[in-house]
Structure formats: structure tokens, C-alpha cells
Amino acid sequence: MTAIAGRITQIRPVRVPVAPNVTEVETRVSLRFTLNGCLDSLLPVLSYSEVRGRSATIYVTALNANNPQSATARCAALPQATAQVSVPGSFQRQQVRVVFLGVPPEEQVVDGGRTQ
Image (cartoon, rainbow, N blue to C red; front, side, top):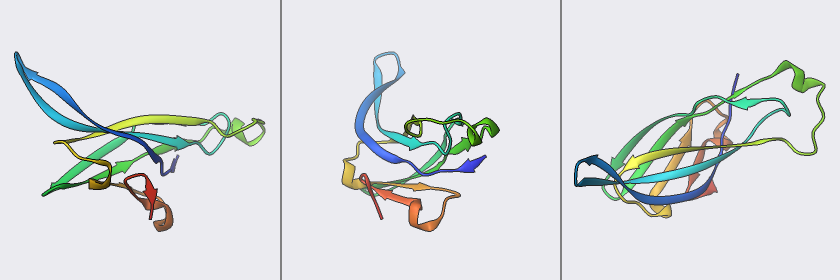
């Protein structure tokens, strides 16, 4: 297993039912990951969010499941995988920061879709 970083592909607020005739708003962040090998897969993504005022930080752990057969497999392009994480409340792209845990610092933080 290897920790990997992803890219934000979409941020959108959605209404989520919490009781009959009651909804709350959460912001869903869609992420795309490039896997490390042709036969690798993405394990379930874990996240934790913090909201401070009008900004949100989502801490994400994403693991690439390394398949030993990827060492000899050939592919035209490395496979992609997607996942969604969410944070309570309604946020715009520039108000959301995603931190990928366990990856090198230069790949770790993504704000509104731009790697810092």
C-alpha cells in the first residue's frame, strides 16, 4: 500500500435528508487519483473535515493497493480512480482545502483544485 494524492474534479453543495421533511446542506468534493500501476486499485478513502468560519479543510487518506503483477503489466496509461468526500455546510471552490495525508509535502495540499 502506498499513500497517494488526488486532484479535485468537482465541488458542489447538495441537500441531504436527515429526517422526514428536513434536509441539511453538505459540500461534496469529487477527487481523481492516478494509481501507481496498471493493475493497482484504490482502497476506500477516509476523510475528516474541519470547518472554521467560511473555510473548510478536509484531511484525506487515500491508499493505492499495490498489485505485484503491475510490475510486469503494460498499459497505455496509468489507471484512474475516483472518490467523494464531504464537509457539512455550503462552500465554494476557493473556500475548500484538501490535505492528503501520508504523501510527500510537495503533493500534500490542494486548494480549490490547485496544488500548492
